[in-house]
Image 1: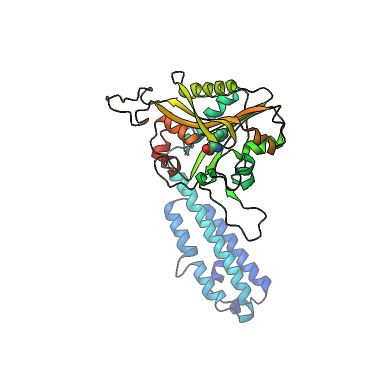
Image 2 (image 1 turned 90 degrees about the vertical axis):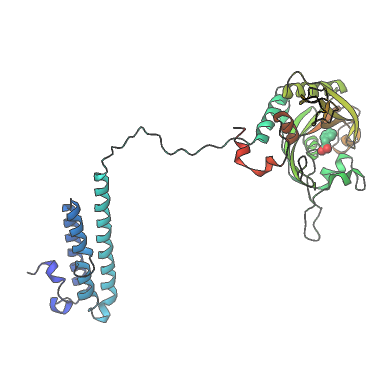
Length: 372
Ligand code: PHE
């Protein structure tokens, strides 16, 4: 009997092969032989010899099978001979790849140190705005407030009307609002909220007094970007409504917050202001964090941060205007409360002495890494 390797030198006609089964048997014998030989391969020269013998270009087993079996097979057999040929070829190649791999592992004489640390991906950290927000939240948690959040896309009703800002009220001009392009016939215009105050309304619609919430979130205005303006920034709204809340509770709460946030040394003051949804309304200032309230810089000149005033404007606030209660079915005769809206970015800039709001949105790691 001629052995299988000899058979690869002959053509099907000489071998008397004519059926599918005959072809299958031939290829199976070849694959079996290739596998037996693979197992014996150890050294580098043996590996090379195996490669030349089975996969080489000219007189390897594969080259002969291709030439003598595949290319001379009668037309009607050609397709499945091709399939067997491909299977055989892949098996030998995969087998050879394994031999190589095994050799590489054996040859690598550095012992594997399982105690070495793996590849560590650096873990990110919270953005400074998020960190400051958490500081603010913790302070308000400590005096009984909870956090709610609301939509960034609002209706004019919540952003304006229910806050006592009717359609042609001049303060709408200050808001430089972004309206959304909506298809004709949309039931209501939509806009990017210009402040977090709409959540005063949404919260009071949902729950009866007492209410003590803060609302952090992004707000949008058509401001041109500069060191203190950005078309997107962050606010924390505060709202407390109950049957017996007085202006004293209001000032006490704000002062408590400011001292917790900036330290006990800062002084606070109120100035009269105007918001349609608070009455009375105030603008809240802190003594300048940079010059200690003196208005003079360390070098003797005018403090550039407060421009010599000794005070820095912090945020707007006030006692909730009774008209607002009308929109949420609260009885203005029975309840009272206060609200405030502060810019997180502004608080962060003051506390961490950052002089450009844009850095919060540029995601420059050199900035972010300073606040791990
Ligand atoms: N919403 C106001 C603003 O963005 C701030 C504010 C909130 C004032 C709550 C009073 C009460 O300017």
